[in-house]
Image 1: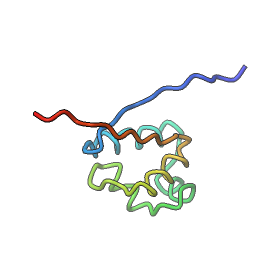
Image 2: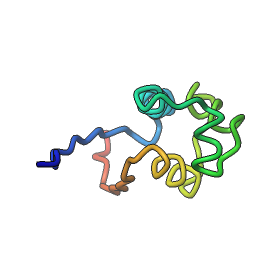
Image 3: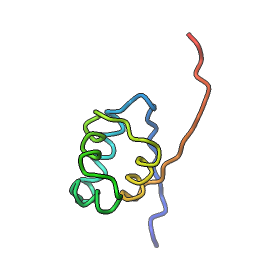
Image 4: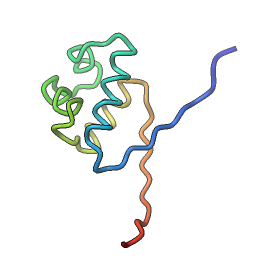
Amino acid sequence: MPDTSTSSITIAATDRRGLGGMLADRRRALGMTQRELEFASGVPQGKISRVERGQSYPALLTLTQIAGALGLELVLTIQDVPST
């Protein structure tokens, strides 16, 4: 019987390093190089590198391409943030 369990990670839009680290961890877990991810996603390796290092936050389309190539589903949640 196939494993149908899922896990979810929530990352704030302002947490570039958290997002990049999670994507890099997933890529490595799949045994992929950044170059292989480039070919699978259509996103240039240099951009993947900057995202993984937290130096750049990808556009939504770019993030969707990377996530899809890594077998991840991107779910966007927009919510009110309480004022302080």
